[in-house]
Length: 349
Ligand code: TYM
Image (cartoon, rainbow, N blue to C red; front, side, top):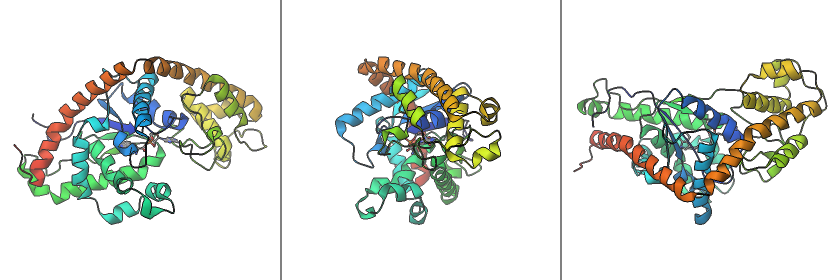
């Protein structure tokens, strides 16, 4: 298959199948994916190989892969229009990640804040996979020569590293890339992060300075995509706030992390801007606003939740969707990986 000289616009993104997906994943990433699906060729991955960088119970992992796939579809991703698959079914990810391990520099990986956070104090005991995780992430994207990557704010540093890896590969192998038929000497695009909207960093409901996360010990800190209506309402009602009424302008809002977070969540759920929400609720008491927010959240998440349950009642169908997506993903990644092998100087039959 002939590859285009210049990579065509293509979207790639992924989520880890570890624990419950939460409102941060939904508003920070998934909502944007559903939107981009209308205008772009899209590939969405369940990154199971990333998940095992920390210990996963095998049975739970298999179930989580299906649950995340169900969440993708229930949120509005169309498995016919876009490619939905799980990473481990497409071996090109692992192959390209190895090449990138040899392109990326130790110093670059040493700067990754997420590794420092996840490894914590017991760094010596972290897996090598956790350390090399950003090279695999670069491989995920570049195995498809993808150009746009919609993610939440917390993935920005990893994406900068992906760009650095793409750039160094292009530089190191420029002559060989030309020989392989790419006249301007560039093979990989520098993938662009797409970090937009009012909820690129959804914060904990218990602490407006901490990110909403799967790994937070308190379940009250996050809204899970599997929470029922009562639980969602209770969590919003109990969300930490300050004692003042809601501010009327964004400058004031920026100084009040908890208010800012809840207004951002409302704006994202309503598909509008924070300024518009402030027009409606500026000066109101939190109790009034929280009631409206709970209703909105339940009305948006409830149907996704119900559809997820329905899809999960037929695991064989989800497995079939993933198999089909993986086949289509391999059809794109295979020829790209073949070229990478030629460029690097590997012999192949
Ligand atoms: P993961 O699984 O941690 O998160 C999936 C997506 O959800 C976003 N996100 C948030 N957005 C807003 N507020 C939050 N509190 C919040 N928490 C999570 C993340 O930014 C992400 O977009 N390394 C990635 C997965 C990955 C990937 C890739 C992404 C692997 N390969 C290639 C893009 C391209 C991760 O762990 O995301």
